[in-house]
Length: 453
Picture 1 (cartoon, rainbow, N blue to C red):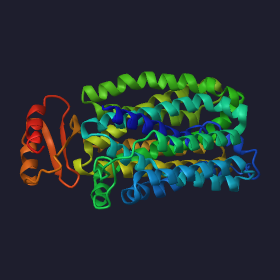
Picture 2 (cartoon, rainbow, N blue to C red):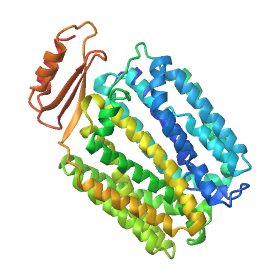
Picture 3 (cartoon, helix red, strand yellow):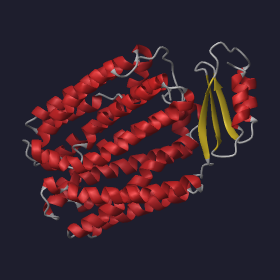
Picture 4 (tube, helix red, strand yellow):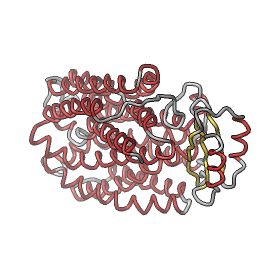
């Protein structure tokens, strides 16, 4: 990477992490502290407040990304960060659950994830874009782990309003960072690998394998939000742990989940057993959720089931994007990821809202049965998943002044040993190749691409 690419990648990864911080920091503590608000005794409304962020995010995520194509990436990012900061201030000053719902909805309305991804694509060369995207993925995972451990102690120290005030302050710092640190691209164009296209939406929405994965991310994150709607309450009531001590539970189970996730992902990717590992992780998640519904009488069993949950969650969270990348049509990867991310955001709302309503009327057990049901359906749906080829996507820049035969170049690239799919998008000046993970003739592809420079 060039210094400019590295600066852009690290800066945008940090910005993306901050964007997720607004959700992750409150994840393990929100439902406990929300009960102190006026109306907070109604867990159905607490669930709505918890999930309102995801609803507005799901509605606005793709439109904001497309809006950034027209008015510029940074303008949309600035607008989204301002909305997020305003929402955080509303949450910090909320004295009733209704105002908390409004504030969380405003936070989610700062839906800038698609605009950030598009800006990253503008600022990185094709051959470095995968590395840059990996930095963003790593920043999200790190933020999630840190938040689960730090949030309980932080909430005890400064309270839930303090967390929202801290988030607002960090968002203002992020606005300054976008202004001072993130470069402004000299050329901004649409990127099929990173952005959603309305013309490609029908093909993505009708794709039977992608539909399975979209249901999967919906089930995974609906269950996540449902579980965190009730788990902090159970740790306090059944586990008899004060909120500032919840990190003592989350830290070991998160670490255990990470330790088991690494070898599982290596086996899945390197030995071409992605579907098998995926199914086993879903089955483990089903066992964990069923166990929570059937037998959780004390802290020891809570920790046991949470340990199984985080092993499964980390594996599924790490492997699903890889499956999307391998299965999605080469020229619609960005659209497929956009739909996938929208399903994830929508799940945050549905999971927490449903869990809040169930807990209000019937307690925690039906919440875990709901999660187990989602996992059972997911397991059945995934049996029909066609195992993807062990492929990866490679991108090459087409010379700005090249005006050759696009169809002919695509055909030549497709005939190279190890290339499974090749598309030349001349309006984006890029060749997208889906190739075998090892053994493909990269030298031949580079020779053909050099002829376009």
